[in-house]
Amino acid sequence: MEDFYAHSPEEKDLDLALGFMVRNSAATEFALFQTMERMVAGPFASVVAARASGPDALDTVKQILDTGAYDAEASRELREVLDDCVAAFRKRNRHIYGLRKPAGEAAVAVQDPANDRPQEGSSAYESLPEELVQLGVDLSELAVTLLKWSDEHVEARS
Image 1 (cartoon, helix red, strand yellow):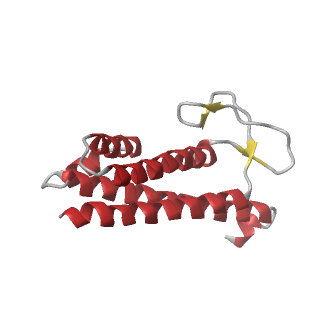
Image 2 (cartoon, rainbow, N blue to C red):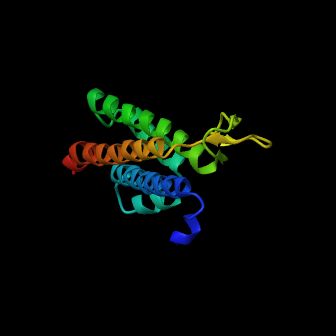
């Protein structure tokens, strides 16, 4: 594997940072699905969770909050976390689905505002390992926050 990166150690750093970010993104999605499954509860909660996409899980959790099942403070806390998740997932999508370019080249990606994926004919953007690592850290913190909220507000009700 080392020989693959011999021509460009920067690419190795970027790929390692991208992998770190993606791993933490998956952990955040898992925490979101766990929170949703706990909130839905009942014998079919795992079926609902298994069939949901990430946006479905976000919408389901928001709809449950809209029912008034949780007090105002708990709902506000979770809504803030969900908003942070949406923002982080948009950044993640730019790095996963976007076209990256070597540092120093002048090009900007044209993103589809609906899902932050590049539009047809878009150019590449620069992606820095430090940005990816920070996004990975942010995603990890969101996962922990989701699970703590779920423990405090959902599991405590059971």
